[in-house]
Length: 247
Image (cartoon, rainbow, N blue to C red; front, top):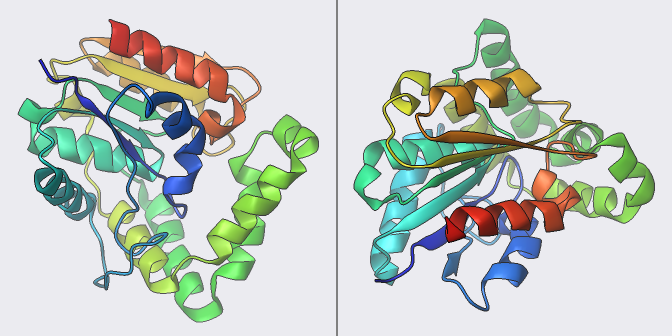
């Protein structure tokens, strides 16, 4: 039996390079796909005004179809988690297990929707450099920022390179996403929820709620990690992923 492919789905407004510690660890012995979502990183496709999570998921399905990949373990971080849940909801027969990283199942409330739309306007009107400077301190734990300042600088450069149109389209799409909690309660496969104990964007309660909603959910909280737990604690993160695969 062919092993399911690890499908790494990056967060907002990043690209596939955030998964380098995982791709390096798993690719030598396990099938791995770590694409750029439409308009991000090296993907230069034109984006519409709004990119919904279902649209990103459809892009991924087409990529997997083209590569002959039938079974996957989506590993989605933040916005990538929203896309991973959309994929699993649309094509559950292709999902062997689900890994939700520093993300949430609930929809945005009115204040969050307003903030998403303001982000979209800011990206289009002011560009990405200012957004990049403001985002990085929220993405990483304080300890990470102090001990690995080079990571913060690289993330700022990565975000600053993003297409304003792609960022705006993604922000509008996230604002429209549905509450996936009712669906998660019906999902029959294993769900591994990973977060950092210092995440400044996703409260721990959101991760706890996902793990409790999934019939076969399990929560892992990585110490001294913020919103990018896979980058901040790669060895511990990879160990949890290996355990899921082995199980």
